[in-house]
Length: 145
Image (cartoon, rainbow, N blue to C red; front, side, top):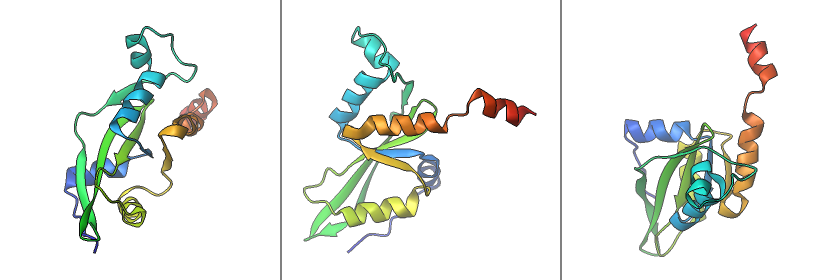
């Protein structure tokens, strides 16, 4: 049985802003920050990556119980960061069991349509999708006139 999750206004606002999301453990997220963020590479004494990013990690996230599977809870953890100006959500399911149908239904209900999504292995695809969405100088000039 699935729970109907009622989001509070702040939760709903944060989820409505998501432009991309990816499945990562907290360790994978940290490794991505080290590999791709300007600050992470600087911390390690490495030169910037060719796809260097700004990365502003939010310090709070959410934990939801989506339902139960075989009488065991199916849970979801969400964390957020702004990466190169794009609001990004990281998620993982820490429960002993998970159900991709419950997770997909949650995302379909609460995230904006058309969000980019991937996993930690393919994170650079998300960065490339963000790069394609950035306005060019031509776009900015056309907008101004």
